Length: 373
Image (cartoon, helix red, strand yellow):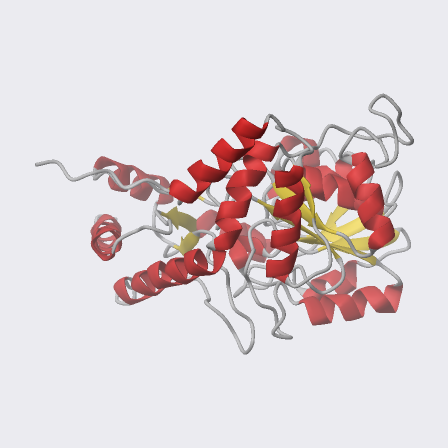
């Protein structure tokens, strides 16, 4: 009998999501209705902040955050080259130049020391990424920002539930912070995102710009500023409400799967497992990324796992080497820590409902694939 394939990711959906989606469908309010407001309230309460603004994606949240901070043409913002491309694209949308800085070799987040060296006359801000759910070094980065008068926009799109060095949930420090709810995230709305405003004035602007520049007291065809169609539908928000209700339980389950991986891969020589936490820092498990031994052919490993019904993926490419960012003068060799991590990183199957036997099978097949060279 052929063993069942194990996918890279799978959302955790159930009866509660179905019931709330049906509630929206029966209401006839599919957008800008009460379910969207409810999602914002419940997510903000879970995070421990005063407000949250739902948008159509994490990328939309990042773009609105750039605009809320007033970053524009000629400005430079420090950020990580080891990230999903949206953290750089959101700057380019507004004519801002991303200034990449190398990363910490353990956490794979923006290294405060390299960021400090990169501050220049045109630097106006910093966009730290909590990569793979591990909290960035926010106390150090905020101190650097304060010393140079820089704005801070946190990309927490992979890190809902992570805890930082001050024992605070990522996204709750008072900076503009963004989350994403794509289908492979810790929680999902299918497509969707959230931005945490820094104050009431920022919240008002964010809600206006996500809705074509329309203020709350304006008519449907009136517009007070440049805006975008970054609204999140109430159908998606209904899924978000259900997911927020069980988010703590899902995070616990994902930690369980990560612990199984750590135990199962402990004996694989040369393999580097991800850091779960240091001090008060605690990862929120978005994906499970290992770093392969340096001499291993990653593509061959992926192919061997695929032949055994196990999905895996190279994760992530360094974004400074994408064609549109090379146009800014970026080249190989500029960020050696990030580039080595990129060359060796491999995503293994990881999802909330993953069983102990599935994890054991992945660990066994990965060890066999590595033994084959």
